[in-house]
Image 1 (cartoon, rainbow, N blue to C red):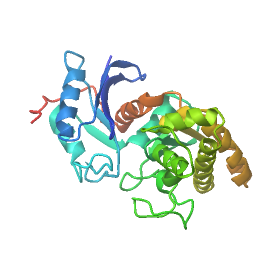
Image 2: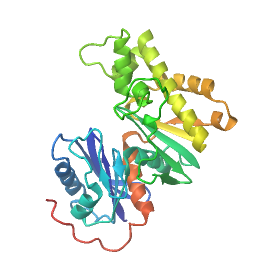
Image 3: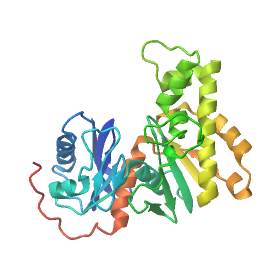
Image 4: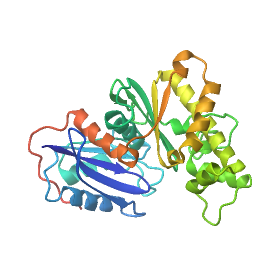
Length: 312
């Protein structure tokens, strides 16, 4: 059985896995993302995963963005030591393998389309609602990456032109309303209290218990998400939306008000027909998508891989 090496890079964790053509994982490992020498940690992780196993044919990488596909460089917002970092070339040099790159949320969408909740969809939007909000589009079974590789940045679609400034440079982005930290921020500013280290999980528990401010935070965030989904569906005619990430773990606290907001905001029948689903693969979706990216790119061949270079 042949395999590819799938890599998922985010501000919280680094993950890698050997994945076959069916999506089965032979072996995998995860480590926290260090503050310094991120590539050194990634090199050790890759070595661990491929050691004493079948030689992979190619590498697929999903990385937090923004990124530049033409140059293969990445500048993840939550990895401050990487700015225009030549990730694709460094991994190719390390492994000696053909290497392809896409955004982590794009890989999330591709993974869910391949093995998760979007398999029958001809036009799917995947959304990761977590510390930030990312997205990816799969159209006709293929990821829509865009000229520079940044298509699907739905977290930074403006849902309120008069809203607060966003760190991205725009105003009123959906991320400012619906990401985990911003749900908590708004709830705290409006009277919710939850001890010294409040987080999204605590907010979801209180919302489920009926706390009015906690519920209002999710209602507000869900409405922003609905506005973004409606706009995306109107522009691209997506038929399915799959939502994952830590905030999706709130379950009905997020999805019930989201359905209500969709009902209120949709007009055209083709937009009203959009089906919203919760992620099936969870944290494994981006790795699955990175593997699919490698298998689908044509770089994975049966030819013996060249010898890897020194990791240093």
